[in-house]
Length: 362
Ligand code: SAH
Image 1 (cartoon, protein in one colour):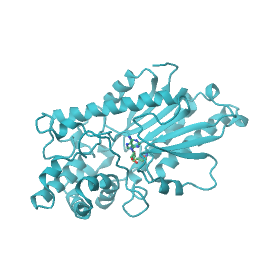
Image 2 (spheres, helix red, strand yellow):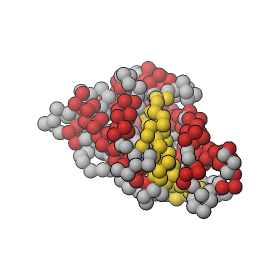
Image 3 (cartoon, protein in one colour):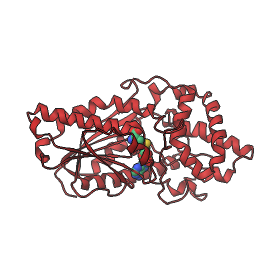
Image 4 (tube, protein in one colour):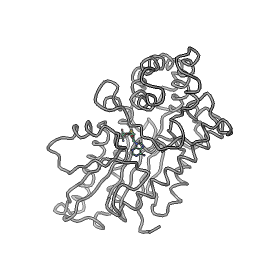
């Protein structure tokens, strides 16, 4: 992933053995873990009387839906929780029709996603291609926004990371967790910029009183990033690529011009950047760990498959498809050297956010 330009690297499409559809259990455990929290936010904070009637649909959008079952499951859960809310407020006869929008980059495998929707579904659906860092919907047209595991993808790798003359040059590495502070800061700045664009666009699209729920892989303040699961990209994938340069299978220049456009924010970073956007109030903002999910430590094989489903496309684009099988063979062997990183009960946390659109025009 090189240079300035915004690029799209969707998850591995289709439903083959390496697909995201077949390898997104890791993400699913968290989606399940926060279900109760989303239900609670809808029950307590969604002001259904304020904006919804039986004559217009209730519109929900998922940003960065990919192809797996996670997106549809989350959307179904949200619809059910809203229906329960209508019943509990004595408004059973006023339950609106639901329209669900599934957003991702246009190169996402929407065909596989659409084929996975049940034919007899009690809601209307539509795909919305394009980057969520810009506007995708008309003003005040959405009532509920959701996004999970997507906002950690940056719109681009900050350019100084590739610049030999910059103090943030990330020589010999392909991600930031074990890099010098300048590299970490360049990534953090890019993340803040991207999140601000996302929030600005959603502020225009969400009706006053509308809710937004976000799940972003992120860390509790003070937790060392070098001990987090994300470090796997650097310590395992990165070091396998470096081994391959030593064997002449990949050029060193190729490795130096590649960095993952992924960032895992700290809680405080999230809080600060959200607070700057006056269109939203924070209903809930917290770190959710594995203890609240119920996932067991993945096997080396499952972790390799999960990593491959998420990173294969971007690696292929830069290094070519010839290296993929060999690289992931090496990855699965190398992973055995870092058993502590696989202990995801401790080192893989998520930031869960609920925001409410306030009656404020920027
Ligand atoms: N929400 C799903 C999928 C997460 S995978 C789940 O929880 O399992 C992350 C997805 O975000 C990918 O499909 C990727 O293409 C998408 N994505 C990343 N950046 C994006 C952007 N700027 N605009 C739209 N989609 C984006």
